[in-house]
Length: 110
Image (cartoon, rainbow, N blue to C red; front, top):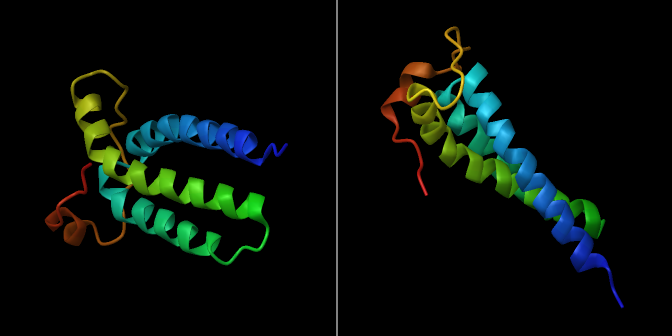
C-alpha cells in the first residue's frame, strides 16, 4: 500500500487552505495591482516543479505554484470584498512597480 496519494492530498489541502488567508493579507497590505507578480511567481513555481527530481518536493512546488496562480485571479475580488467592509482595508498600500502599466491590463478572473 502506498501513502503518497493521501499525504499529497493532505499537503494540497493545507497549501490551498493557507492560500486563502495569504490572498487576504496580500490584498490588504499590497493591493490587487500585484496580481501579475503573483501570477508570474505561480507559473514560475509550476515550471520549476518540472525540474525537481524529488517527487514530494516537485508535487508540493506544483501545488504551491497553482495556488498562487489561482490566487492572482482572486485579488481583485478580494479588493471588492474589502470595499464592501467584509475585510479590513489598509489605507496605505504599497504600490507595485509599473503600476500605471498594470492598471491598463485586465485582471484575470476565473
